[in-house]
Length: 113
Length: 222
Image (cartoon, one colour):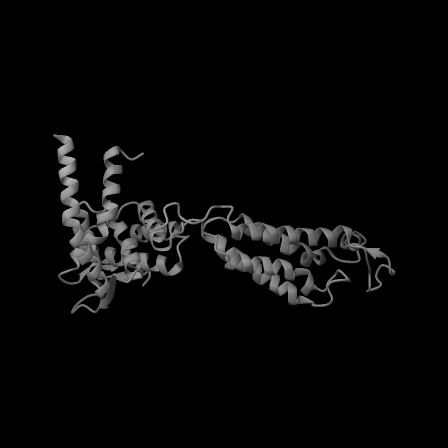
């Protein structure tokens, strides 16, 4: 059984992990391990492995694309990048997020004081 | 890309291969393309992390339990399609399979025990006979009943399969029934029905089971 905190955290992640992943790709493509490490450090995914089902869905939804690139040395590596649609989705999220999060923060902090 | 790929540092460690096999097994309900894509991402992750000099156990611990990956995959499938990834045992496809099995069992029973046809081969002197009668009187060797009972037996096994063997099982039964249909059209054991007409209803039911949507709508469809 997950604890109350784990359950709350899982619910919070649900709505924001997708835009946060898109935001990580805003400034350029990344490969899987980098994405997984960043999201995991930020506490946005419970385990690095859960990134890959998410990436598969974002690709199916047309928000993310990937390409394999032959590295100068070593094995080819898969890079993930935003699509036009992904960029539009991120823009929509960031426009709504600031007022939304301000309201939630004000309400929650008001309730705790 | 498969889990047999080698890393810059050599072949993939056994524990990583085991991990990938566990993930793959738990993703059985996903469409093959989704499953392959998820696995390919994880293979890449493992190879990259190993190439950075991390140990296999560190990498696998970071990835998390195979169950977590499967749970996340099911959630993403649900978000994308509005349907649950893992079908209930008794879903529309399995009900069709059950009907196909029941039909095969009835045919087998009818031909073995109750068939009241004239034996056109004349082996029983024109009497009304059943397959059992012929076997018991040594006129047909026991493997002769196989074409009669095999479809029911195979359909029964297939209807009880769970997990990733379930869908391929339906296809196997359908192929078997197709072979049965074509084995002797117009000349089945039953003098009134050829094998084509005898097995066609079961084949139709199994084919319907292959194509009917079998995943229930997700409770919180988007």
